[in-house]
Length: 359
Image 1 (cartoon, rainbow, N blue to C red):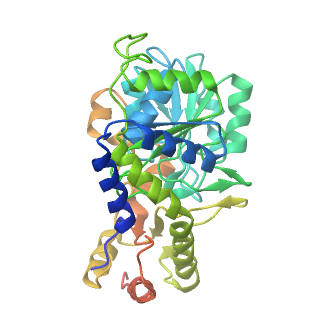
Image 2 (image 1 turned 180 degrees about the vertical axis):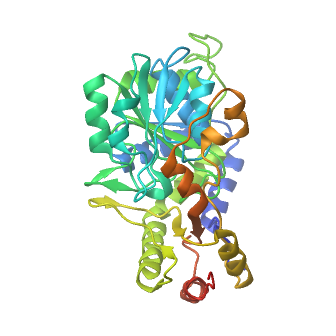
């Protein structure tokens, strides 16, 4: 079976972890600082702050911008639940805006109508590795004085009109095991604002910049040097990993031809990094997934239930019906696209998709 994803960890990562273990400095230390500097350089910003996960990155980014109880944050319903949960954890209220069916990202034409006097921020999600419509989103945000926090958890290395993900608003990245690069678990926040960066560092470490002196209520959301050592090695492999993903996606684009399947659409001026290669299945998706599994191809659904329909969100009063997100949740099916695939794997995947019998 070709799995939907597989982290690529090699001897270099093993050696980096052993070096940290032998150093005796395994908590947040010099490897974290090196990783932050390299990550900031990748994103073209002066500051990057390492944290314990992509979720804590979003949570702290909201707090660092002063967002809390009584505030509203506009975001997409079609994403991993951490995007919305981080807003709730900050004490604010998520406001969901429907998505564009071509990109799967938040529809910028619908954002302005969702803004109220309580709106303080927009969190666009760069879903599957393709950056949201940031020019339009930033124009709206600037006009209304709103903070923009980029949920770039799936988009490290992605670009729009030459600009890296995480370089426009405050960027939040995940380094979970299945992401385009990993530190095992971990996250990163990028910013050009020194005040925000300083606030983030305080928040991630018990509100302290001097040991046992605490300036504000903070958290233990730090990254370890073990994680940073893995992340540094992986960061050095990002360009090669991304080229493989692009090669795989281009192969699928050329060769998948099933009439009941729509392939991903890359928007003009964008560099999609294909965290996921997501099809739309215009027939029986469950049957398509079953047939692909029989053919030895793993698949996954990202995401089967828009956030407002999740049981907890129903429990707290959400009743949103967002027609495009609702429809996409019944159609999307992701194929394996990770860098470790061979040409034989690609051919097997294409043959399995083109051979689907969905009549």
